[in-house]
Amino acid sequence: MIITENDEEAICKLKHFLGSQFRIKYQGPLRYFLGVEVARSKSGISICQRKYTIDILAEAGLLGAKPAKVPMDHDLVLLSTGELLKDPTRYRRLVGKLIYLTITRLEITYAVNTLSQFMQVPRHQHLDAAYRLLHYLKEAPGQGLLFPSQNQLKLIGYCDADWARCPITRRSVTGYCIFLGNALVSWKSKKQVTVARSSAEAEYRSMAATWLRYLLQDLRVDHSEPAKLFCDNQAALYIAANPVYHE
Image 1 (cartoon, rainbow, N blue to C red):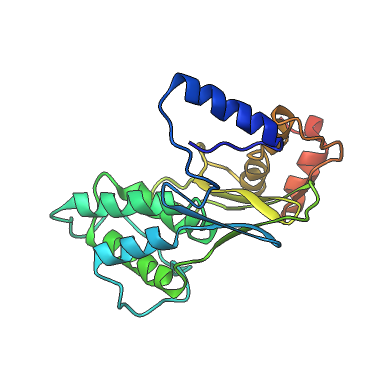
Image 2 (image 1 turned 90 degrees about the horizontal axis):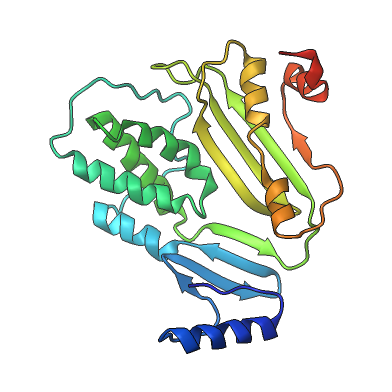
């Protein structure tokens, strides 16, 4: 269990209370937790999953593989056709590990989201795409996130949507990332629940997916300024600026 608080006295009181109720062992400042490595410096706190990534590569037998520059080709389209895998458990286990890796690697979120859609009936083309992603991870297994020690608590979001990206369902794919100052704190790549009839509708649904202001209120973080949300679709921006105008 991780204990975090701005007040050292409150932490000591909580540890004393837990120690009086349960048999616990205090292991000192956080360095490693469930595959996530934590390092501190004057610049801030950095997290990564280097050991976890290397373990995935070792299990797949790709420690000596040639690194790839991108996690997935931008024009790759995976379909539910082709030769079935004789042992789908291997694919499901690999994709499950990759899903957990997205805790610190947002650049693989889209690729992992795409691969996870074929967990029920995986095929050879899906496994090949998953191995291509492992070649990308070989390039920099220790890449992670930095949370600066000096930072302004202002929300800035970037969102986009790939209209009718899925060739099977024709549903769009939403993608967004949100910064608190200079720190990346939230991101997602997910297929939308309905079929958008225009690119503006798909972009607007992507804009509506942000929710962190409510979380900041629960944490009692004052954020009186409007959060900035960037989108590259003019029609979606007009709809968002005048919500009464549309149905």
